[in-house]
Image 1 (cartoon, rainbow, N blue to C red):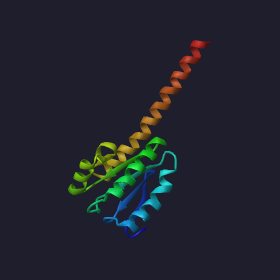
Image 2: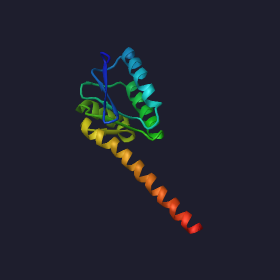
Image 3: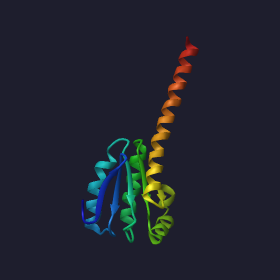
Image 4: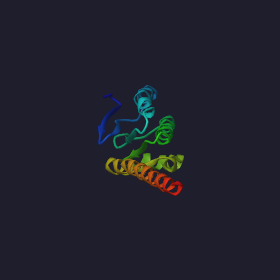
Length: 138
């Protein structure tokens, strides 16, 4: 646990709660904790913004990098519980179009868990298609 953030796990999803606006030192600390999570395949991460009064453009860049890496590795990423000012900044900056932004951690958990259900469904469909192709070839 850090002064600027807290990390916990709930139902296989890492939840990183930001406790205040991050300065350069805090951003470095956040990068240190996020980097291993971004490199773990199929990792799910939620950034809880409920206690964060505002975010900087550098933090937004880090969120975008995390979202891209996690989602390309079959994981999930969401921002949760931003206050109205942070929500507005996410929308104006375009981040809200590129990352999932949900009103609560509970909704974010459901969204990233839904990614797992979709992955399992896709795998089941591929298995059925493979069986059908095998039968046609017989």
